[in-house]
Amino acid sequence: AGHAAGLPPVDGRDLLPAIFSGNVSAGRTDSLHLSPNAVLRWPWKLITGPQEYGVWTSPRYPNCSVAANAIAGLGPETCDTRVWDVSIPFAPLETQNKLTWVHDCGYSPGCL
Image (cartoon, rainbow, N blue to C red; front, side, top):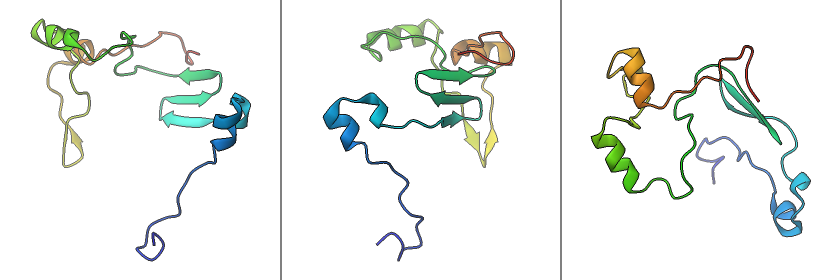
């Protein structure tokens, strides 16, 4: 049905053997590009440059702390507001980075 509608083929992997066997190596073993600045190759994740939302949150996040943080001006705010594919900043860069929880490990060429 997808081909008749002009859609590309489904891009997926059969992970049932990994799920049913509990064998983590039966899943994806090649690299997975997460973003222009991040690649995952289990058990490592290489990150280069600043990353939005680069903080650890509690296992129960989001919770009531989200409202308290927003009222206190601590974020998180959306990091990708666009109009006609043009990024629209909502504050000076330093403030925007604080409110979108930008983190940079500070090491070149990147961090594992």
